[in-house]
Length: 142
Ligand code: CDP
Ligand code: MG
Image (cartoon, rainbow, N blue to C red; front, side):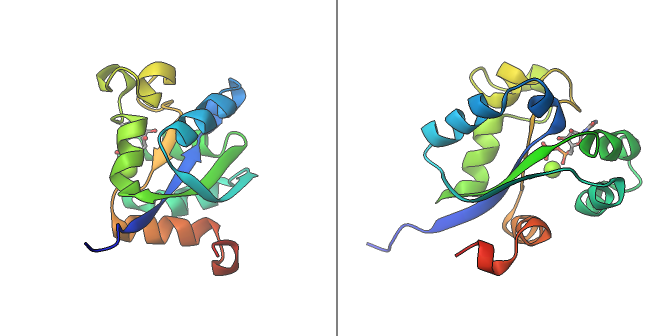
C-alpha cells in the first residue's frame, strides 16, 4: 500500500470573522476536521498586499470591495496539513456563497454574505503553493 499523501493548503480567517470573535470557533472546526496546523500568524494586509494575493480576480466587479474588505482588519493565516487538505478544507468551509453552502459548513453556519464568508482556502495545488509562499518562508514550514 502506498503511503497516504499529506497535502498542505493555505487557510485565512477573514476580517469579518475576526471582528465578530469567531476565530476560536473556526480553529475548533479545523481541529475537528483532522487538520494539523503547520504554521499560523496574525497580521493586517495593506490594500496592495491584498491586491497581490487576489491578483487572479483583478478586473472582476468585486475586486475593489474584496481587497478593501481583506485589508480592513486583522486576519489569521495558516498552513493546514492533512490527506487531501485542499479539497477537505474547501469542504469544511463550504461554497463561496453562505446561502448555498452545506449545513454544518463554516460559511453556512457563520458567514453573512458572499463577500463576508469568514474564511479563505486555496483551490488547487498550484494556488496553494503560491498562497503559502505569499505568507510563509520555508524555515517557518519545517
Ligand atoms: O473564496 P472562494 O475561492 O470560494 O471564492 P472566489 O471566487 O475565489 O472569490 C474570492 C472571494 O471574493 C470570496 O471568498 C468572497 O469573499 C469574494 N467574492 C465576492 O465578494 N463576490 C463574488 N461575487 C465572488 C467572490
Ligand atoms: Mg478562490
